[in-house]
Amino acid sequence: MLRKAARYRMRRTTSLRTSWDGQQSVAGIIVLTSATWVSTSRLTISCLEQAAAAFIDQTYGHLDILVNNAAITVDERKSPPSQLAMADLQKVFATNFFGVFAVIGAMLPLLKRSQAGRIVNLSSKAGSLALASTSASGSFFDQIPPALAYTSSKTALNALTVAFARELRGTKIKINAVSPGYVATDLNDHSGLLTPEQGAHEPVAYATLPEDGPHGGFFGSEGAISW
Ligand SMILES: NC(=O)c1ccc[n+]([C@@H]2O[C@H](COP(=O)([O-])OP(=O)(O)OC[C@H]3O[C@@H](n4cnc5c(N)ncnc54)[C@H](OP(=O)(O)O)[C@@H]3O)[C@@H](O)[C@H]2O)c1
Image (cartoon, rainbow, N blue to C red; front, top):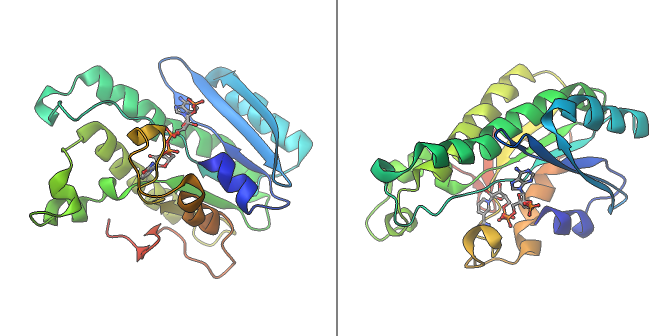
């Protein structure tokens, strides 16, 4: 989805997509400039800070946009929370939460050198506690299983977004959690209703926010989403 976002609208930006698998210590890095992917590599977490940050530092001197796009899920259709394996919960959090934390930490010094640093955390309405706890009969939430691993990883990601937003108040950096909508991708066996190009619309918009844009929020195509 993010590759298509890059081709779709970004210009003259330096952006990066990565995540961290705590077990395998793997991070995937893609750097783009002028809407062209210029580097793709997989690095061990031990050299993430040194190699990825040093590469961006030496090549661009700063980072304008960090989109934390990577996420995984496990099949929770037949695994209610009481039957979810601890290993699956940890696996999902490794990519969807700890990976984001590690990458933001590594990239923050470079983002601080940008004139308008932007961080977009790809979240999901499924992580909204407000929506999940108040969903009416027949609603979207009523029709999907209580997928604890995926939903709680996105809830945690939202909390991370708010915490970093508080730390970064008063800086030129804006960080937001953004839901792309229900997009047909590998994540949902292509059952989504939106195309990847349509799903890229909101993440790209929040990655290119003007100076007076929002900071520390949770947004989708409909505007603000309840936490
Ligand atoms: N699709 C939807 O309806 C929907 C709805 C709400 C939110 N979202 C969110 O939108 C984001 C993008 O999802 P998507 O639908 O595009 O999913 P996707 O098609 O499954 O893509 C996920 C991407 O994450 C990468 N990835 C997974 N684990 C990784 C790791 N350990 N290290 C590096 N990269 C890793 C994958 O790279 P490889 O292919 O190289 O493994 C893949 O490019 C996710 O954060 C998802 O939670 C999606």
